Length: 207
Figure 1 (cartoon, helix red, strand yellow):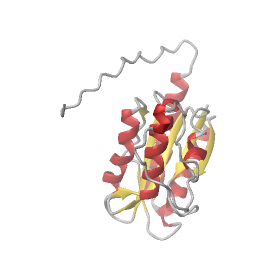
Figure 2: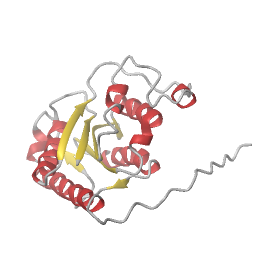
Figure 3: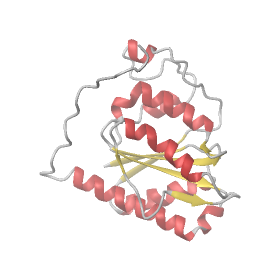
Figure 4: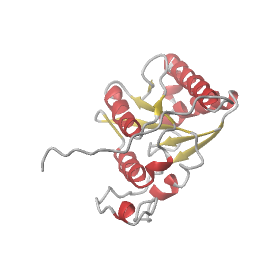
């Protein structure tokens, strides 16, 4: 089973990377295969609401000049996802949000019904609001969200400082073990299939 970890920090080897690495190390010890994908620090587009990805059934964003489609191309091969972000003004990194919104909208079918978790890193506060923001798209995609012994939060300011957060690192390891347990049980022989999904019945309140 394969877990895709998404590093949404503009710093490739910063505190978010340390948190995700602790999750990945635990997953690998439990027999999972992992890949960590860094979204980079180059400019990214926000969603233009053009609906070309849906109307043309592309399975990817119509704009192919940044990291978005390189990320979503990895969705199909993954059985689970862990998204990590630093906390900026109580929110996830803006570039990460822009990429995830486009990737989930255009290629969300490859994420739907799988296993997922979010991780946030902060200096002092705002991490739980950022954590909630990252979880919300996964909830709309019918994923099985995995928790830990606390919110999936690690503290640290200067690069490398998060490794000193003993409870945060323990929270990451517990998250990794919980995710491995969920994956093993979902994929074991004789496991009950996930419940069927009803066809979506959208209701718009302005008619």
